Length: 139
Image 1: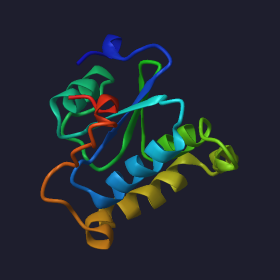
Image 2: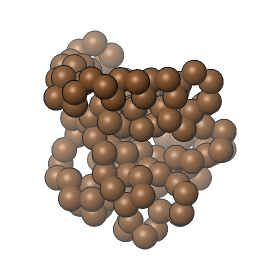
Image 3: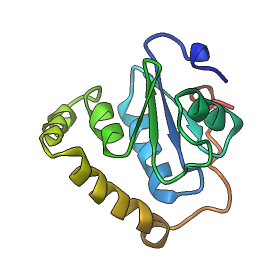
Image 4: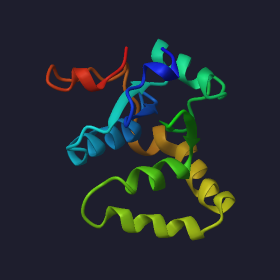
């Protein structure tokens, strides 16, 4: 998969397919993305690895969720803040956390990421989307 394969106006979320916390984040977004702005792929998938390389990130990096938006890759706390801008309700208010310096935000993010399997568990295999959501997932 190449960056040019991503339809205009859409972004891609790459996530650790075996992480329960990461899968929970995807499930959270699926419910709150009625305009279907996002497409999804696991970091372990061929599409995930290809897109990581396309934005200049190491393909074996699975300690962060990655957002690919307008041809650029965003990682760590920037993902949550950028995604919150496009959600309804009060979620865009979370962008106020941009005032916290990135190294501090990412230190907290990395602490959670290091402990995610212990705290939230791990799946044996990547999630399989339901037939009605399958079109939102890249192979």
